[in-house]
Figure (tube, rainbow, N blue to C red):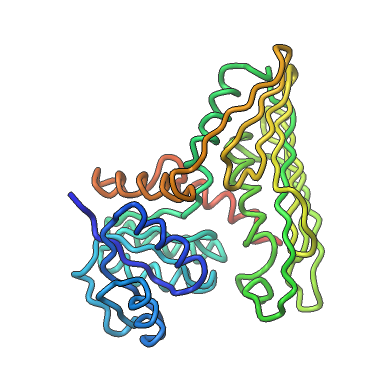
Length: 307
């Protein structure tokens, strides 16, 4: 069964994801945008025959849609497709507020439709290796996680500066939080320190977290300075380093036996693992992922909403 994909959005993220779909020889049958001319230009550029504005979508042309619009548009755009019984893979953050997420979740339930947040990091083979090394006791009991994702964004027209849906935490800090969720599982204590600009948008965030087992995490995100996007998991008998953890292709294990490096180069860019997982969910008739579940998205958004 070859599934038919649509892409909603025509920006940088939409193009990156579409290129992977095409590289995997997926059947991409439609481009959708709020602006019909943008949809037409984007579709023509990529050799896709069908293009639509929101007002004239032919929902019979596709089975799955990837939503890659502005953060503040994720809820209405996703619900449009959910209400027409299309499986929706929505770019992170899945919503800006918990109220939005609850509305999306209810809509998916009412329509018996698949919905998942596109947190591609969770599906990378390197991340699976990290979980395997921890479970096998290679570094002993985990005691601390240090993770950071910091970039420079100075263009005031960037979506980062949007007072609703912008900010460092929703854009890059979300990766830190999802990674921490994979390692810590639960969060029972959170201390947060934010630096905002004049418009009240968070530019730098530092979260200090502790879970029910006493494992701690220090998470730093910023759009004001660059820093290596590395995650380091410390255990009683060693440590695991994941360079560029959000797009992880390498895992470095250091313990009493020495140092080992495990490499997992992507087939295309890394998005392919998420794509295959989502297609499998659709084929199996599942309504949410067991790797990035509604509860996972909810717990992460609950923290980010306080920024």
